Image (cartoon, rainbow, N blue to C red):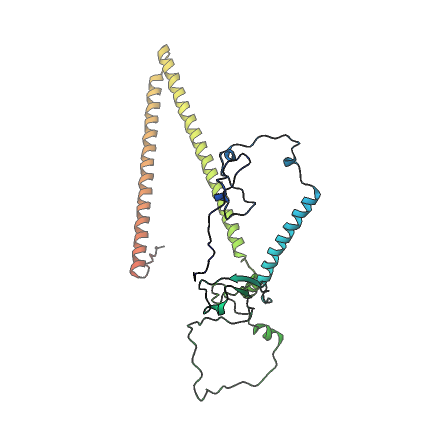
Length: 330
């Protein structure tokens, strides 16, 4: 006596059976999920589906009404998404419409005459407050403010007024200060405003004509270098061919001489002629060797003198001494 009967709330699910009289255990998996969600909870769901005929209704194309319905839903969804993006990109936009009014039934845990004026339940009306789009931020920003002018303020000397030309007006036109790196307020700044403030569209790239001249000079130098290399290769090839012909001629003469000696053919005075020819050939070869040695020595001395001269000049430059010019006598 004296106790109020409180309704007991239970989360237990009711027992459900299939058409075969078996218990539906997959009800637990479907609890709290939407109706159209596909849930695989049986072994038969994991088996591959059977191949159906071409005339099966599930494989047929949808009719015109279904196509029109799906098209209209897609168009409405895309239009809603586009409108939200466009409205967010506008510099000034109207206030968002509030959400519709919602009603909730509230049952307090404490019951009695002394609570809630004796009522067991209350109906709560939830209304979204209107937001002002131009309202400044509510949070304080610890930002240092510059001091005011001293008293008395400093006098300002102005020049006499004069009319400004159109050119001066354009030069004094200051673009809006829109930073591409900082946005402390978190405002949405469109791309056209950023580009207008940056001035990239007004810039013109000018290429100096010296670049074209440099490219032409480099091309001509490369072509001349290739021609010189080709001429040097041809000259070396010709010299090698002449050397080869000379060696072949010498070998041919030696072979002819050997054949004559083997055959026993000796002309009168041939021994003296052969000995003089051999002495002349030996003398010519030794003369070529001496000339070659002189050329090598001369080239080595000139290269050594050049290295020493370059080293002397570099040392003088490093020491900061004046260059010494050698005067050659007449």
